[in-house]
Image (cartoon, rainbow, N blue to C red; front, side, top):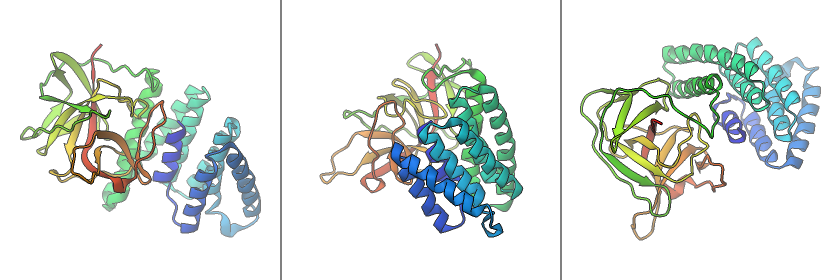
Length: 334
Protein backbone atom coordinates (compact mmCIF):
# COMPACT_ATOMS: atom_id res chain seq x y z
CA UNK A 1 0.00 0.00 0.00
CA UNK A 2 2.99 2.27 0.60
CA UNK A 3 3.56 2.99 -3.10
CA UNK A 4 -0.17 3.37 -3.77
CA UNK A 5 -0.71 6.17 -1.24
CA UNK A 6 2.43 7.92 -2.48
CA UNK A 7 1.13 7.68 -6.04
CA UNK A 8 -2.34 8.93 -5.05
CA UNK A 9 -0.91 12.11 -3.54
CA UNK A 10 1.69 12.68 -6.22
CA UNK A 11 -0.51 11.98 -9.24
CA UNK A 12 -4.07 12.91 -8.32
CA UNK A 13 -4.21 15.37 -5.40
CA UNK A 14 -5.24 18.78 -6.76
CA UNK A 15 -2.88 21.56 -5.62
CA UNK A 16 -3.10 24.98 -7.24
CA UNK A 17 -0.21 26.74 -5.53
CA UNK A 18 3.25 25.83 -6.80
CA UNK A 19 4.72 26.40 -3.34
CA UNK A 20 2.41 23.73 -1.90
CA UNK A 21 3.34 21.32 -4.70
CA UNK A 22 6.98 21.72 -3.71
CA UNK A 23 6.08 21.15 -0.06
CA UNK A 24 4.32 17.90 -0.97
CA UNK A 25 7.38 16.71 -2.90
CA UNK A 26 9.58 17.62 0.07
CA UNK A 27 7.30 15.65 2.43
CA UNK A 28 7.31 12.62 0.14
CA UNK A 29 11.10 12.77 0.00
CA UNK A 30 11.46 13.24 3.78
CA UNK A 31 9.20 10.28 4.50
CA UNK A 32 11.49 7.86 2.69
CA UNK A 33 13.17 7.36 6.08
CA UNK A 34 11.77 6.96 9.60
CA UNK A 35 13.76 9.95 10.84
CA UNK A 36 12.45 12.03 7.95
CA UNK A 37 8.85 11.01 8.66
CA UNK A 38 9.28 12.06 12.29
CA UNK A 39 10.71 15.43 11.25
CA UNK A 40 7.88 15.92 8.75
CA UNK A 41 5.27 15.31 11.47
CA UNK A 42 6.85 17.95 13.73
CA UNK A 43 7.01 20.49 10.89
CA UNK A 44 3.45 19.89 9.73
CA UNK A 45 1.95 19.98 13.21
CA UNK A 46 3.74 23.26 13.89
CA UNK A 47 2.48 24.74 10.60
CA UNK A 48 -1.11 23.66 11.31
CA UNK A 49 -0.92 25.25 14.75
CA UNK A 50 0.25 28.52 13.18
CA UNK A 51 -2.46 28.37 10.50
CA UNK A 52 -5.26 27.72 12.99
CA UNK A 53 -5.50 31.42 13.86
CA UNK A 54 -5.35 32.85 10.35
CA UNK A 55 -8.38 32.93 8.05
CA UNK A 56 -6.13 33.57 5.06
CA UNK A 57 -4.67 30.08 5.44
CA UNK A 58 -7.96 28.15 5.57
CA UNK A 59 -7.60 26.88 1.98
CA UNK A 60 -4.22 25.36 2.84
CA UNK A 61 -5.26 23.62 6.05
CA UNK A 62 -6.92 20.52 4.46
CA UNK A 63 -3.86 19.96 2.27
CA UNK A 64 -1.54 20.18 5.26
CA UNK A 65 -3.73 17.68 7.10
CA UNK A 66 -3.46 15.20 4.26
CA UNK A 67 0.33 15.74 4.15
CA UNK A 68 0.36 15.08 7.91
CA UNK A 69 -1.75 11.95 7.45
CA UNK A 70 0.85 10.61 5.02
CA UNK A 71 3.77 11.37 7.36
CA UNK A 72 1.95 9.73 10.29
CA UNK A 73 1.20 6.69 8.17
CA UNK A 74 4.88 6.40 7.22
CA UNK A 75 5.78 6.69 10.91
CA UNK A 76 3.32 3.90 11.72
CA UNK A 77 0.78 6.02 13.61
CA UNK A 78 -2.35 4.60 11.98
CA UNK A 79 -4.97 6.08 14.38
CA UNK A 80 -3.44 9.56 14.07
CA UNK A 81 -3.08 9.13 10.32
CA UNK A 82 -6.76 8.21 9.95
CA UNK A 83 -7.76 11.16 12.15
CA UNK A 84 -5.70 13.59 10.04
CA UNK A 85 -7.24 12.18 6.83
CA UNK A 86 -10.67 12.81 8.41
CA UNK A 87 -9.71 16.43 9.16
CA UNK A 88 -8.55 16.84 5.56
CA UNK A 89 -11.80 15.36 4.27
CA UNK A 90 -13.87 17.74 6.40
CA UNK A 91 -11.94 20.73 5.03
CA UNK A 92 -12.24 19.62 1.41
CA UNK A 93 -15.99 19.08 1.80
CA UNK A 94 -16.42 22.56 3.29
CA UNK A 95 -14.71 23.99 0.22
CA UNK A 96 -16.79 21.73 -2.08
CA UNK A 97 -13.56 20.30 -3.48
CA UNK A 98 -14.90 17.03 -4.91
CA UNK A 99 -11.62 15.69 -6.29
CA UNK A 100 -9.66 16.09 -3.09
CA UNK A 101 -12.60 14.76 -1.07
CA UNK A 102 -12.38 11.59 -3.16
CA UNK A 103 -8.62 11.44 -2.59
CA UNK A 104 -9.08 11.79 1.19
CA UNK A 105 -11.72 9.03 1.22
CA UNK A 106 -9.55 6.78 -0.95
CA UNK A 107 -6.55 7.32 1.30
CA UNK A 108 -8.57 6.78 4.48
CA UNK A 109 -10.09 3.59 3.03
CA UNK A 110 -6.60 2.21 2.38
CA UNK A 111 -5.53 3.14 5.90
CA UNK A 112 -8.58 1.37 7.34
CA UNK A 113 -7.85 -1.65 5.15
CA UNK A 114 -4.21 -1.78 6.27
CA UNK A 115 -5.20 -1.54 9.93
CA UNK A 116 -7.81 -4.30 9.59
CA UNK A 117 -10.99 -2.15 9.77
CA UNK A 118 -12.59 -3.61 6.64
CA UNK A 119 -16.13 -2.33 7.26
CA UNK A 120 -14.85 1.23 7.65
CA UNK A 121 -12.76 0.78 4.49
CA UNK A 122 -15.87 -0.38 2.59
CA UNK A 123 -17.87 2.64 3.81
CA UNK A 124 -15.18 5.10 2.73
CA UNK A 125 -14.79 3.35 -0.63
CA UNK A 126 -18.55 3.53 -1.29
CA UNK A 127 -18.62 7.23 -0.43
CA UNK A 128 -15.55 7.84 -2.59
CA UNK A 129 -17.13 6.06 -5.57
CA UNK A 130 -20.26 8.21 -5.31
CA UNK A 131 -18.18 11.39 -5.32
CA UNK A 132 -15.92 10.05 -8.10
CA UNK A 133 -18.99 9.47 -10.27
CA UNK A 134 -20.00 13.11 -9.75
CA UNK A 135 -16.55 14.34 -10.68
CA UNK A 136 -16.48 12.11 -13.76
CA UNK A 137 -19.78 13.55 -14.99
CA UNK A 138 -18.60 17.10 -14.27
CA UNK A 139 -15.38 16.48 -16.19
CA UNK A 140 -17.36 15.17 -19.18
CA UNK A 141 -19.58 18.26 -19.21
CA UNK A 142 -16.69 20.71 -18.98
CA UNK A 143 -14.59 18.78 -21.54
CA UNK A 144 -11.37 19.21 -19.56
CA UNK A 145 -9.29 16.41 -21.06
CA UNK A 146 -6.68 16.03 -18.31
CA UNK A 147 -9.29 16.16 -15.54
CA UNK A 148 -11.46 13.65 -17.42
CA UNK A 149 -8.61 11.17 -17.84
CA UNK A 150 -7.65 11.46 -14.18
CA UNK A 151 -11.30 11.08 -13.14
CA UNK A 152 -11.59 7.87 -15.18
CA UNK A 153 -8.50 6.40 -13.54
CA UNK A 154 -9.59 7.37 -10.01
CA UNK A 155 -13.10 5.99 -10.54
CA UNK A 156 -11.72 2.75 -11.97
CA UNK A 157 -9.33 2.22 -9.10
CA UNK A 158 -11.99 2.98 -6.48
CA UNK A 159 -14.21 0.34 -8.11
CA UNK A 160 -11.30 -2.12 -8.02
CA UNK A 161 -10.75 -1.38 -4.33
CA UNK A 162 -14.44 -2.03 -3.63
CA UNK A 163 -14.20 -5.35 -5.47
CA UNK A 164 -11.13 -6.30 -3.46
CA UNK A 165 -12.78 -5.38 -0.13
CA UNK A 166 -16.07 -7.11 -0.94
CA UNK A 167 -14.48 -10.28 -2.25
CA UNK A 168 -11.85 -10.66 0.41
CA UNK A 169 -9.10 -11.01 -2.22
CA UNK A 170 -5.66 -9.80 -1.23
CA UNK A 171 -3.02 -8.50 -3.60
CA UNK A 172 -1.18 -11.81 -3.46
CA UNK A 173 -4.15 -14.20 -3.67
CA UNK A 174 -6.24 -12.75 -6.48
CA UNK A 175 -8.53 -15.44 -7.92
CA UNK A 176 -10.92 -14.36 -10.70
CA UNK A 177 -14.38 -15.90 -10.94
CA UNK A 178 -14.93 -17.93 -14.14
CA UNK A 179 -17.14 -16.76 -16.99
CA UNK A 180 -17.82 -18.93 -20.03
CA UNK A 181 -18.16 -17.03 -23.30
CA UNK A 182 -15.11 -17.82 -25.35
CA UNK A 183 -13.19 -15.88 -27.97
CA UNK A 184 -9.92 -17.09 -29.48
CA UNK A 185 -6.95 -14.82 -30.28
CA UNK A 186 -3.41 -15.58 -31.42
CA UNK A 187 -1.08 -15.60 -28.44
CA UNK A 188 2.49 -14.35 -28.31
CA UNK A 189 5.02 -14.33 -25.52
CA UNK A 190 6.38 -11.31 -23.70
CA UNK A 191 9.35 -11.94 -21.43
CA UNK A 192 10.20 -9.33 -18.86
CA UNK A 193 13.37 -11.23 -18.03
CA UNK A 194 16.63 -10.67 -19.98
CA UNK A 195 15.40 -13.09 -22.67
CA UNK A 196 12.37 -10.91 -23.44
CA UNK A 197 10.96 -10.30 -26.91
CA UNK A 198 8.23 -7.99 -28.19
CA UNK A 199 5.67 -9.60 -30.52
CA UNK A 200 2.90 -7.88 -32.51
CA UNK A 201 -0.36 -8.81 -34.18
CA UNK A 202 -2.92 -6.62 -35.96
CA UNK A 203 -6.27 -5.99 -34.33
CA UNK A 204 -9.63 -7.47 -35.29
CA UNK A 205 -11.69 -5.18 -37.51
CA UNK A 206 -14.79 -3.62 -35.98
CA UNK A 207 -15.78 -3.47 -32.32
CA UNK A 208 -15.57 -6.60 -30.19
CA UNK A 209 -16.58 -6.87 -26.54
CA UNK A 210 -14.27 -9.39 -24.91
CA UNK A 211 -15.28 -11.28 -21.76
CA UNK A 212 -13.24 -14.47 -21.89
CA UNK A 213 -10.85 -16.11 -24.32
CA UNK A 214 -9.13 -19.40 -24.92
CA UNK A 215 -5.34 -19.47 -24.77
CA UNK A 216 -3.64 -22.72 -25.74
CA UNK A 217 -6.94 -24.51 -25.22
CA UNK A 218 -7.46 -23.16 -21.68
CA UNK A 219 -10.25 -20.73 -20.67
CA UNK A 220 -9.17 -17.38 -19.27
CA UNK A 221 -11.21 -14.58 -17.70
CA UNK A 222 -10.46 -11.03 -18.73
CA UNK A 223 -10.24 -8.12 -16.29
CA UNK A 224 -10.30 -4.56 -17.57
CA UNK A 225 -7.80 -1.98 -16.30
CA UNK A 226 -9.94 0.88 -17.64
CA UNK A 227 -12.90 2.49 -15.89
CA UNK A 228 -15.43 0.20 -17.60
CA UNK A 229 -16.10 -3.38 -16.57
CA UNK A 230 -15.86 -4.84 -20.08
CA UNK A 231 -12.96 -4.72 -22.52
CA UNK A 232 -13.99 -3.08 -25.80
CA UNK A 233 -11.60 -3.54 -28.71
CA UNK A 234 -11.76 -0.99 -31.53
CA UNK A 235 -9.71 -1.04 -34.74
CA UNK A 236 -6.08 -0.48 -33.83
CA UNK A 237 -3.08 -2.70 -33.31
CA UNK A 238 -3.75 -5.10 -30.42
CA UNK A 239 -1.99 -8.17 -29.19
CA UNK A 240 -2.11 -10.63 -26.32
CA UNK A 241 1.24 -11.04 -24.61
CA UNK A 242 2.05 -13.71 -22.05
CA UNK A 243 4.02 -12.59 -19.01
CA UNK A 244 7.08 -14.31 -17.62
CA UNK A 245 8.46 -12.56 -14.57
CA UNK A 246 7.47 -10.94 -11.28
CA UNK A 247 7.95 -7.23 -11.95
CA UNK A 248 4.23 -6.42 -11.51
CA UNK A 249 3.09 -9.17 -9.13
CA UNK A 250 1.92 -6.56 -6.61
CA UNK A 251 0.12 -4.32 -9.13
CA UNK A 252 -3.27 -2.75 -8.51
CA UNK A 253 -6.10 -3.16 -9.22
CA UNK A 254 -5.04 -6.64 -10.36
CA UNK A 255 -1.71 -8.38 -9.71
CA UNK A 256 -0.05 -9.40 -12.99
CA UNK A 257 1.57 -12.74 -12.32
CA UNK A 258 3.92 -15.04 -14.16
CA UNK A 259 1.85 -16.83 -16.83
CA UNK A 260 -0.89 -14.19 -17.05
CA UNK A 261 -1.62 -12.55 -20.39
CA UNK A 262 -2.08 -8.84 -21.00
CA UNK A 263 -4.01 -7.12 -23.79
CA UNK A 264 -1.86 -4.37 -25.29
CA UNK A 265 -2.65 -1.47 -27.62
CA UNK A 266 0.21 -0.66 -29.96
CA UNK A 267 1.34 2.90 -29.16
CA UNK A 268 3.51 3.64 -32.26
CA UNK A 269 0.87 2.43 -34.76
CA UNK A 270 -2.25 3.49 -32.86
CA UNK A 271 -3.68 6.85 -31.85
CA UNK A 272 -3.01 6.26 -28.14
CA UNK A 273 -0.86 8.04 -25.60
CA UNK A 274 -0.36 6.69 -22.08
CA UNK A 275 -1.13 8.79 -19.03
CA UNK A 276 0.59 8.75 -15.68
CA UNK A 277 -0.62 5.81 -13.63
CA UNK A 278 -1.21 3.46 -16.57
CA UNK A 279 0.71 0.24 -17.26
CA UNK A 280 2.86 0.12 -20.40
CA UNK A 281 5.14 -2.09 -22.46
CA UNK A 282 8.52 -0.48 -23.12
CA UNK A 283 12.06 -1.24 -24.24
CA UNK A 284 15.35 0.38 -23.28
CA UNK A 285 17.25 2.48 -25.80
CA UNK A 286 20.44 0.98 -27.19
CA UNK A 287 23.40 2.50 -28.99
CA UNK A 288 23.85 -0.45 -31.36
CA UNK A 289 20.18 -0.91 -32.39
CA UNK A 290 20.00 -4.36 -30.82
CA UNK A 291 16.67 -5.59 -29.50
CA UNK A 292 16.48 -5.12 -25.75
CA UNK A 293 14.33 -7.07 -23.26
CA UNK A 294 10.74 -5.91 -23.07
CA UNK A 295 9.53 -4.23 -19.88
CA UNK A 296 6.12 -4.25 -18.20
CA UNK A 297 5.95 -1.22 -15.87
CA UNK A 298 3.76 1.49 -14.36
CA UNK A 299 4.16 4.80 -16.24
CA UNK A 300 4.70 7.62 -13.70
CA UNK A 301 6.24 11.09 -13.72
CA UNK A 302 9.40 9.83 -12.07
CA UNK A 303 9.86 7.02 -14.61
CA UNK A 304 8.82 3.42 -15.23
CA UNK A 305 8.12 1.69 -11.92
CA UNK A 306 7.71 -1.93 -10.90
CA UNK A 307 5.04 -2.98 -8.42
CA UNK A 308 6.53 -6.09 -6.93
CA UNK A 309 7.27 -7.85 -3.68
CA UNK A 310 10.91 -7.54 -4.74
CA UNK A 311 12.78 -4.25 -5.13
CA UNK A 312 13.29 -3.08 -8.72
CA UNK A 313 14.95 0.21 -9.71
CA UNK A 314 12.94 3.00 -11.36
CA UNK A 315 13.85 3.41 -15.05
CA UNK A 316 14.13 6.97 -16.37
CA UNK A 317 11.68 7.83 -19.16
CA UNK A 318 14.45 9.22 -21.37
CA UNK A 319 16.06 5.76 -21.38
CA UNK A 320 13.11 3.90 -22.93
CA UNK A 321 10.72 3.80 -25.88
CA UNK A 322 7.06 3.06 -25.20
CA UNK A 323 5.53 0.32 -27.35
CA UNK A 324 2.22 -0.62 -25.80
CA UNK A 325 -0.53 0.43 -23.40
CA UNK A 326 -1.88 -2.42 -21.25
CA UNK A 327 -5.69 -2.30 -21.01
CA UNK A 328 -6.60 -5.74 -19.62
CA UNK A 329 -5.28 -8.83 -17.89
CA UNK A 330 -6.33 -12.41 -18.66
CA UNK A 331 -6.07 -15.08 -15.99
CA UNK A 332 -6.54 -18.79 -16.42
CA UNK A 333 -9.79 -20.14 -14.99
CA UNK A 334 -8.90 -22.46 -12.12
